[in-house]
Amino acid sequence: MANLEPTQTPKLEEPKFGFNEYSERLNGRAAMIGFVLTLAIEYFSGQGLLSWLGLQ
Image 1 (cartoon, helix red, strand yellow):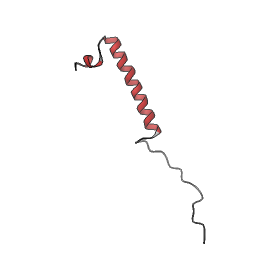
Image 2 (image 1 turned 60 degrees about the vertical axis):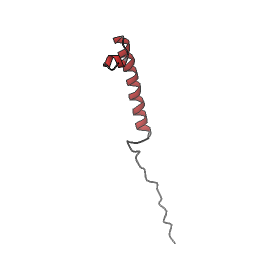
Image 3 (image 1 turned 90 degrees about the vertical axis):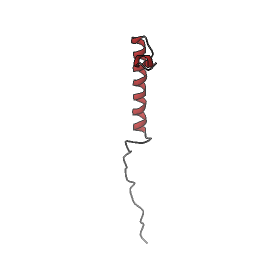
Image 4 (image 1 turned 180 degrees about the horizontal axis):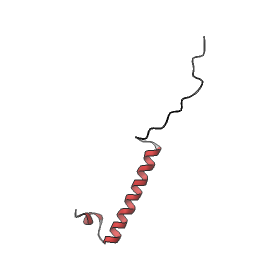
């Protein structure tokens, strides 16, 4: 009987959504930018973010 096993493993691309390295890195960068922007708003306005937005 002939060997029916494939000789090569297919190279599948990692999806660009869900829990994968690409999306986790992108989410981490967005969180860092948001945190720095929040600190900058609080420093330059002299108010907390919620008061600056008029929510408190």
